[in-house]
Amino acid sequence: MQEQGKTVLKVGLSTCGIAAGGNKTFEELKNLLAEHNLDDVLLKKTGCIGMCYREPIVDVITPDGTLYSYAGVNEENAARIVEEHLKNNQPPEDLLMSEERETVVGSQVRITLRNCGIINPESLEEYREHDGYKALEKVLQEMTPEEVIEEVLQSGLRGRGGAGFPAGLKWRFTRLNPGDQKYIVCNADEGDPGAFMDRSIIEGDPHAVLEGMIIAAYAVGANEGHVYVRAEYPLAIVRLEKAIEDARAAGLLGENILGSGFSFDVKIKKGAGAFVCGEETALIASLEGERGMPRLKPPFPAEKGFWGKPTSINNVETFANVPWIIYNGADKFAAYGTEQSKGTKVFALAGKAKRGGLIEVPMGITLEDVVYEVGGGIRDDKKFKGIQLGGPSGGCLPDSLLETTVDYESLTKTGAIMGSGGMIVMDEGTCMVDMARFFLDFVQNESCGKCIHCRLGTKRMLEILIRITEGNAQIEELELLEELAYNVREGSLCGLGQTGPNPVLTTLMYFRDEYERHILDRTCPARICRELLTYTIDPELCNGCGRCLKRCPTEAITGEKKELHVIDQEKCIRCGNCFDACRFDAVLVE
Image 1 (cartoon, rainbow, N blue to C red):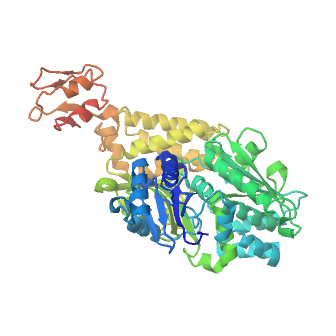
Image 2 (image 1 turned 45 degrees about the vertical axis):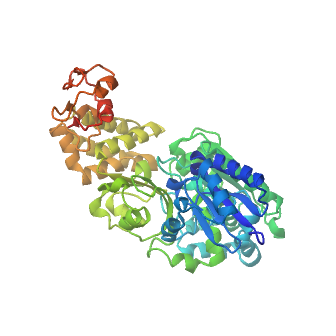
Image 3 (image 1 turned 120 degrees about the vertical axis):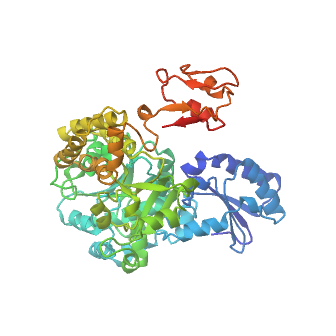
């Protein structure tokens, strides 16, 4: 709560803000406030509002509630905000982005991200001031476990980790299965390239995740919970640890929570960063101290999970939705979305979108609206080419499918998947064959090796893709590549192998002509695959300045000063240094 008569300064200090220099901005503001004796100004930390492309972000909130949002605030700009805005009441207009923030954030529906970028994530008091733990109070004082499960079922909340299984149904199975001990596990092992939803939620609102876990534990009858979070998320871990400690001290975790007789506590397990541990049975194996490898299902974790006991596993986003649903009612959540995909979904919008960052949109929105309305379109106003959904196990969709609605069923029909929420936008400068190679290389490296189809099949597929990008493949290999992809999908035990071929299958489906040009014409239309490029110098544009010659690492370029330069194709390694060095567009790439 804002203290009476005081102005508040909030600095976004999630990983994106810190990486952009947010810590230095915070310290500079702290020193400046002390230097100018501005005792009526409160300086606070907050999480990521989602506009990662604009960090470091500083918000100034006046006593009457007016919000001034500043972007790209470095140490120099921090001094301007203090001098011009706080002292002279003249906000520096060139730094303001209040209207842009209203456009970007205002176009979203924020349930999971309701507190991110708003509250101090390290303050239990601020979380409670924003209705935090009121849902827990309601559950413990007014609802039976069965009623909690029924409320979550009625909301239509499906697991946001990728599979989309109804959360309430999973909780019901866990509750009904007999066991002297039951567990709640939060899957925070976010490993998709370009995905940062779970990290940002924990960094920006850790208590929402904890409250969701406590409610789930009450519903299924568990008294012990575990958060499996990758060790590469140090800030998320620090803030989660503090949230757990503060919740314990306030009687919200531990024995006899809020005097209800219900007891539950949470531990953190730091994962080693294995992508396969995002699969629930592999996660359980790692949690038990074993190598993270998937197990055959059934039995499912709800029957035999952690230490062979009934276990309910949901991801960060799923748990963060639960308090809002319980406090506001299932109907309000179900009012968003489609018939089968209710509520909202958080996405990490990355790649070539102008407004890259974290977004939350209602299910049923079209991909076109996500890219152009929320994401602002394509950077440098280039042509949209494709969008990768669902991480390395997802699919690449072309512009002809931009009208596809964002829901589990519609995306699956296209060959893509919702996944945990990675969304990578690609422009005309992206090579789809190289993109498929990149993701398959990731999947092949992350395969645990248990299934032969996944272990060897992905390797053979990768070898074909490498030959294609190097111009050494035959056209018949496209059929072999497709056959291998289907075999890997059908013969793998877990989701990694079952969905790993998706980038290859969807690019073959929607961008097959690009594969054919690589093989038949030995050319890369996007000019990405180095082995298929040829660098030459235009005699009409070259003025012999020598910049390209100096940058060439293999001495492939010859020519006297102020005379035409020439590239020796035998020596050229296609590094592109000459192209980058030329100021006169004389270096051509074909």
